[in-house]
Image 1 (cartoon, rainbow, N blue to C red):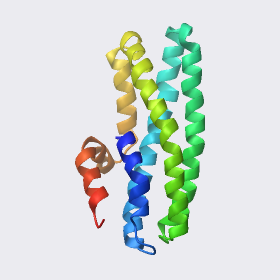
Image 2: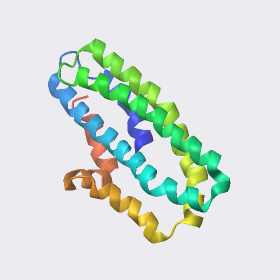
Image 3: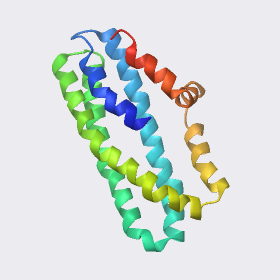
Length: 169
């Protein structure tokens, strides 16, 4: 979901007509929800995943350090997106929209690289080193932090996100 939606996001922002605050409000809410989910995803890993993996697989410390460092640099990129989003959301000003779209474009490559490494290198370790209950804690934590309507949105993400992406384009 993160790859798909953040890949579409810059064009979604650029498609909003200058000054169309109704549409910028819809897109802004979608982007805010998406960035919140990404924050919760990384925070959950920081609190529940990395400590267990570090304890059980010390030979992969360099990998865990790299993944942890990614959270910091991706976090800085998310901060830049959120700053630009605040400037654009209520105005739909073209210049602010361009700044937001550029910040989203800059966020995507390091995030995709990080997510790819999570799937290729971390998930096999999770499969070997965490119990199903421990893995379940991570998902339960994430869903527990979301209001029910956003949890359902996440579960039904493809249908909802297709709707958000096509409304008044």
